[in-house]
Image (cartoon, rainbow, N blue to C red; front, side, top):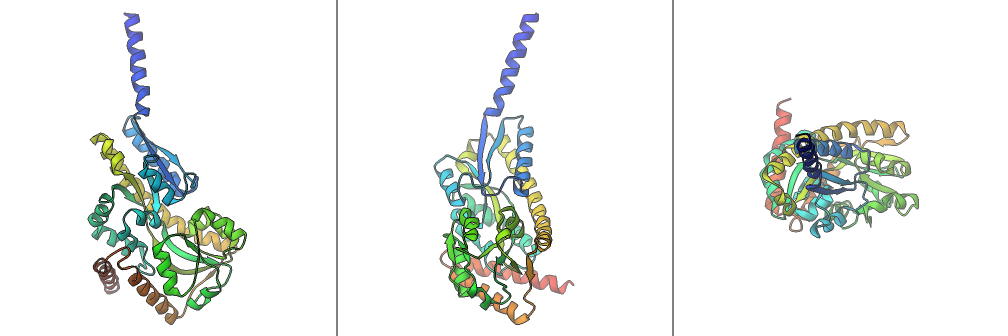
Length: 336
């Protein structure tokens, strides 16, 4: 009897320890270790491991060790990776029309962004699915600001800046074309070195990333007027997703929504705190006080969004999104 019990116990232990090897989702991102993005992804991983009884979990590659977003997506297509956390550049590589979310000077408030996501949720998800991906959740990067070694308030000031542009980003190309400047295209992984060697002296990013990527150490000024709002998402290859049993898919998707909503809330808080931190560290915050300057930037945004029509999204889609934003803005004003 004792022998039978011992054998049963050993078989049970072997069965349990085999579970963690069953479904490993290889996940890569450019987000550095220790950032809010990675901390929440670790919580997400812990949650799905616990709920699945150890049958499913992420293997996480942070900090760009698998390359930039285009490199990671190429490796997903080859089956070397399965999932990624991406910004607008990566999103556009999968579903170009979704770059409307990163369009220059389109959004002014988080409420506008949240309502657009709610209204277009099904259309956004379908855009991913048509290209072979499942969106596990949206996790915005935040409002994007220009950082430089030259003081900038009005558009003309940008002409003195050796501005970086994320290589191959059509939204950035259209934005800078509308602004009338000629940026230097580089991979995001080359930016810090290029700031150090003075190949560039201007960048654009969210405040928390300026700190996390150490770009703030090589600039002096921040223009406190968002260039755009940067979207973010966690996606998984549909091929890999479909290999998961239905119960594991449900666990993965439900927790994705929960933890990526948490990440969005934390990102908004962290970005606000990061602006304060940057100012404390000596970054000079500049604000375009003139209404004429603000209108000029808004006109640039309208021109840039039109330049992208036919390249990333249709004119009808642009008009529908802009119409919704205008309505939201109007309703918010009338309710005050």
